[in-house]
Image 1 (cartoon, protein in one colour):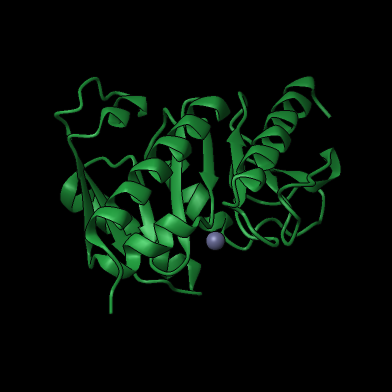
Image 2 (spheres, protein in one colour):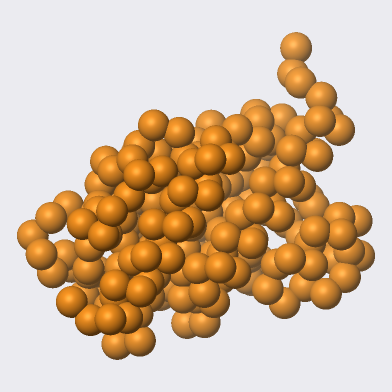
Length: 203
Ligand SMILES: [Zn+2]
């Protein structure tokens, strides 16, 4: 086990504690990953409790996404790999199942617009509240390759994205490190909460 793998695994463990304490990865939901220098990946093992991760709960995939230790990675590994493939600058992907992401997915169809939020500046490459960020909302799908293709198609049509929501499920966001991805999760969840409160509850 390389030091880099151990260091990044530790960062994912710490991220899991933070996200669990906020109530954003309940039960065994959510999954996290990091791209290592050699192009291989560290990712959480399927079915692990994200608030109580240990180094044994983070496994290694080769650069093609194949497990290197015979264990089963997160069921949503394909979504992580698709993002890394699409965006070479991404080093970490975090996927919480947070209440506000689920709430806004029930309130808005197709996409959510985030604008005039100071916290937009917490996202990589955005330096003003005046930015207009579109967060696509995709229908939930247990067919991960199909869902990954749908995400890819959206990027083909609209260009880059900072995050996407899966309806009734949670959201994906990323960054050039675990800490920047964590910052993106916190900022997005805050903005999702605000939009959920602003637009009320469906009756
Ligand atoms: Zn999920």
